[in-house]
Image (cartoon, rainbow, N blue to C red; front, top):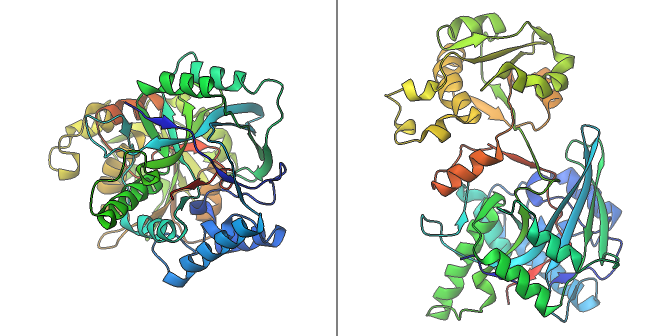
Amino acid sequence: MADIQPLAAIRYPQSEQTALISPPYDVLSSSDKQHLLEKNPHNIVAVDLPHVPPKNAGPAQAYEQAAKTMTAWIQQGVLQRDSVPALYPYEQTYTYDGKTYHRRGLFCRVRLEEFGPEGTIHPHEQTFSGPKEDRLMLMRATHANLSPVFGLYDDAANVVTGKLFAATTGRSPVATAKLPSQDGQSQVTSELWQVTDPQVIASVQSLLREKHLYIADGHHRYGTCLNYRAEVAAKNGAALPRDHNANFALFVLIAMQDPGLIVLPTHRVAANLSGFSIEAFLRAASGQLQRVSEEFAGDGMDALEKCLPEYGLHAMGIYDPKTDRVVVVRPMERDPLGKISNDPALAGKSEPWRQLDVAILQHLIFDRVVAPTFAPGQTMQWAFPHVAHEVREMCQSGHYQAGFVLQPTALESVRQLCNANELMPQKSTFFYPKLATGMVINALT
């Protein structure tokens, strides 16, 4: 069962926090960090992003300095710890495609579990050792969860958030901040409340107790918490007491059916290709893919992204930067990966996994069309733009020779595969917008 607990958070005491919080560490560059610190030297990135890029562990002194900074801020009152444990209702207001959304959830602590078929916490993507090494170095130094894991749960009637936000009626948020959206086209407003009523907390805990939790974002953070707990237990020489803080991770939990929850696609651009063109691609894919559209101009990429579902299951756009044109294709078979019997990477994969567009792109289009035709003897490289027009911009830069525009992964697919303990390919989902970092910090001591 899911064990949800309140926490006495470490927080900035002022209610206006726009210059103090930041997007998650893993979407920030060195210049992003510098810009945030120029706005306010007490911005959370001074602690949460000691090493850039955070894909591997940096020098030990970087994490030691982050810990010293955090300690100094607490001593100076820049950060303060709440005196009473609480659940923290959290709402993000944002605009996407001309529509305003309100996404509601809560900050809390969740008891850690090892992943497995009998558990109630489920990943949906694989993790890599480098990012976990970076986060573990920081966690060892600061003894804190600085940014939350993004978790989902099933609640068709939104009873949990209804109960929790009812307790905030008539109360102003304790913190408010605005951050640019991921695409830079708008702003995301984050608002935070504090609920300390024991009866409300107990009711929310009871409602969530029988839920399964699905990690939407923050797999590396969760894996780091598991590693940190194991280290603390090893130093302790015995199993940790049940209520030891290292047994918990900081989460934001949001219902899958929340009206403000949307999932956007993660597209691909590919490098190290030679001789790529739409015509050559279609010839190489003959018998496996069918063309289902006329060619579109590259400046219509965003419009194409929105209408891709109209072209059917697994339809995706193929972009050629040399001609600045894009065409829509889809597999000729309903289950194209089910026809492939000689690929060990597909052995034992369920039909829901084989139906993922990102799996079809990787194992049918990349492995069997693009790589052998346009990158023989080469190692393909790719990147993952979130917005369709970024596909064009990145390819036009000259570094990438082809772009692939995808439909979003359905939430139901995430749930099905999590429950079956199957991991999706890398960058299968993009839960928009990102959670803010710095509004709630969970002390592990």
